[in-house]
Image (cartoon, helix red, strand yellow):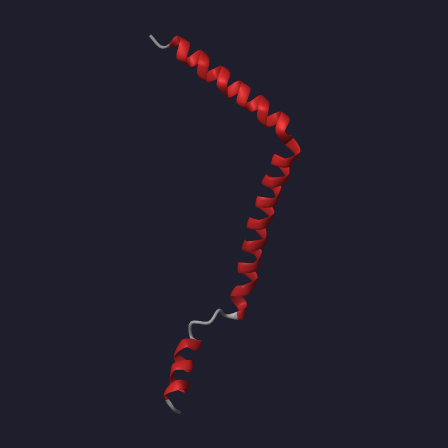
Length: 69
């Protein structure tokens, strides 16, 4: 066994085991699915909902400012 083969055997221990790919794939799919859900909900709301939220926020901040002494 020459030097390169010894290094290959050493680093082969750090490779991902096939048994750990299923949970990794499941976790990745769940993260992508959650991101997609948030994206779709935000897209359905559209710009009108964003404008309404900004109006409510600006009204709340202006009423808060008028209350301070």
